[in-house]
Length: 353
Picture (cartoon, rainbow, N blue to C red):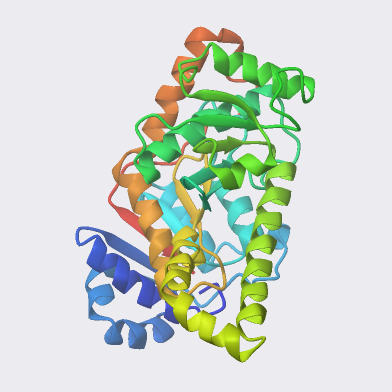
């Protein structure tokens, strides 16, 4: 029930997802009187969905602290389904802050994970690139950065299908002495870890778009700034291209000649292909769809969640953390760290809101 076009685009997106994943079943949480007519128009979605009715919705502008009190809201019920093992993951286009807060508190972190991280896929000159953290953790220590590297490695293997993704630590320079102590210490840990053969070292801002590495690891403050800067640059490029090709008759003719190539560029940079930011390190799969996406974009977010469920993403994180701790005992769980209890198994995704 969340997002600019909900619930219409959610049901239409699930119809696409049901065709791509014929064995999947979806728990659709929301207002049944509004959902039933939509399912009647999308037979594929109707055959794959079970409705759990609630008329209570978390508004897009509701503060996370207030959202935590709405135990009967559609987003909360979907997250409860994951925490209880009834569903393997949740996909939502609703309130981002509420989704993250609820997921952290209800689903909880995986054992050994100090802080979950927000990750997403973006375009680069050499293919898709994974970047994390994108804002869930403004301040990070050495342990957090190493955990992000482990999670980014497993995510790239699971969703991008890479066998040995390269990993870079975002820094102010590529030289070994650049950056603060925590970044340099994280690099030293990764150099002697099971990821040593994949660890590229330090990368800079321009390396993100260049595709120097498959995975970019950074703290949430820097990652969020880099993400928003990249989004702004893409919008500016699109605006400038429109202005150039409409500036004169000759420019319009040039557009007609260049149109096939521009269409390929548009497909390559289509934001729907990259819809679906993921909260990594929780006891269940949590995917955040952009609130302004359409059915194709929502279906892509479901694709990401399905890949993570089918390929047992969280098992990969557990294995990666065990290898880190084996070589670096000091990287074991902190005292008082969360022992997440969310279920990873199951064959259903809760399409929340």
